[in-house]
Amino acid sequence: MKITVLTYLDSEDENSKDYDPVVPQVARTLRGLGHRVSVLGVHGDVKRLVSGLSRRKPDLVFNLMEMFGDNVFGDIPVAGLLDLLGLKHTGSGPGELYLSQDKGLTKKLLSFENILYPRFAVFSREAAFETGGNLRMPLFVKPLRSDSSLGIGGKSLVHEAVALMERVAAIRKELNDSALAEEYIEGREFYVGVLGNAQPKALPPIEVDFTGFPEGVPKVMDSKAKWDEGSKEYKGTKSVLANLPDELRARLQKVAVDAYRALRVRDYGRVDLRLTDTGEIYVLEVNASCYLQRSSEFAMAARAMGLDYPRLIEKIVNLALERHGK
Image (cartoon, rainbow, N blue to C red; front, side, top):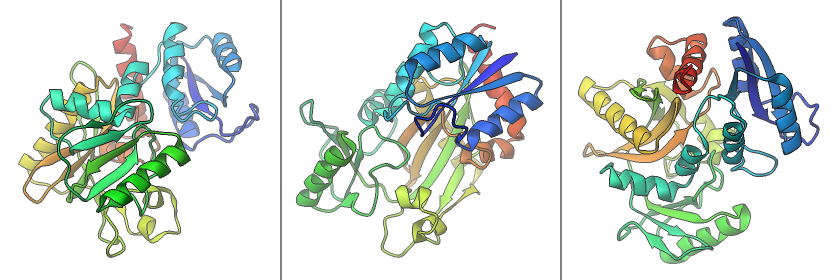
C-alpha cells in the first residue's frame, strides 16, 4: 500500500526534517513490511497539510500528529480533517481524542461504567465549578487537558486550600488551561497497553519502578521524571515488565480494557493505573493513540506478548484497515 506517515514539526520551516524519533522508526518499519512510504511533516499550515495529502493520495495515513502549530490540542482537528477528506487513518478520531484529553469528561464516563477513579474537582474559567465528590487532602493538581506531564511538578501535590488555589491560578496563567484537582492515590503505578476495536486485548502490564526516587518527593511521573535527563526524578525511575500473580495481572488488564472501551479508543491506546495497598485499582488516565517509539512502554509490553516492533506496527495498520472495512 501507499502509506503516508503524518507528523508535526516544531519549526515553522516546513522543509525541516527534524522529526520526533518515532517517525523514522515507524517509516522504516513500514518500508520493511513492503509498503511505499512517504513522510509528511507540517507545523501549522492547513493548506500545506491538505495539498500534501492530496498529492500523495495514500491508501492509509499512519497518524502520528500530536499537535498542530502552537496548539497542543491540534491532533483533534487534524483527525477530523482526515475524516472529512475521506482518508483512512490509524488511531482514534477527533471525538475519541477529545474525550481522552479532557480528564473531567474521562472521569464522568468511567463513573457511568462503574470504573474506579480518583475523586476530583474541575476549576474552569468558562464554566461553573464541578466536583466529583467530597475531596480529601492531599490533592494532586494538574491541567485538565494538557498531556506529557505539562504543568505537573513539585508543587502539584497540595495539602491545604491556599496552595490548591495558587496551583489552579498558575495552571490557568501558564498553560491557559482549566485545572483538575484529584485525590492523590498512594500505591504502585502501572501502564497497560490495549490493542483492538471490537475485541480489544490488553498487553502485559508495565510497572513504574520508583525505588530510586528522591526521598520525600511524591511518586508521580511529572515533567522532570519524564523529560529532564539530569534530574534525580528521571534517573530514579524506570519502567519494567510487571512481575505479578496471574489473578492480579488479569484484574489490571480487565480494568484497562473496560476503560479503553468506555472512552471508545480505536486501534491502540494505553491506560495508566494505580494499585493501592488494599487492592483497589484506580484509573488515572486513558491515552488514546499513545506514543509508539521502539523504547516506549507500549512497545515493551507488545514484545513481552510476542509482538516485536514490526509486528506491532503491522497489527495497528491491519486494525485500522479492518475498522475502515478494507
